[in-house]
Length: 225
Image (cartoon, one colour):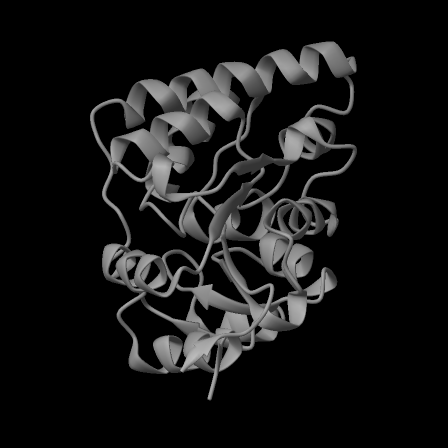
């Protein structure tokens, strides 16, 4: 079997490549507590997970100026980096999938709403930054997720056809972004339940990258007989 033309893999970062959502939840609670906001896992998944910082700030601090909203969000991100500096774990099966992709000559890219310092810290923490062609940062574009632009930019950098690509996401926001860009999307259930990911638009959902059905779907999308 050979690669289909213009194929590629596109990965979200937080909760998809790395098990970082618990650290984000802790950082949100620390940063937002002075303003009367507290989050449990369910509320985090519904209102925060995968959202762009600008959108979160506008939602939870509508009485503040955009500059103040951004400062609050950057304090939260700094808290997260302090927590993540102690180390994060990759999602199970990731390295085997990346090894398979490398053996096929299949390019990969990361697409995230995280700030660039976060993305670089996390990718370096699990030693995979050089395995990705590039990192698309939603905050550096005109629109972040759930807008399709971050994934469209990822496709542009890869020179890829969405029909021959697979995206991996753990949030409703990310699934909306990837599917709106025309990419078959697999939900990774590190935070949401399998059925919630499928309900959000994922073609299938898996606990991790070692799932045989996930691997079969990837092969079917990127390989030709």
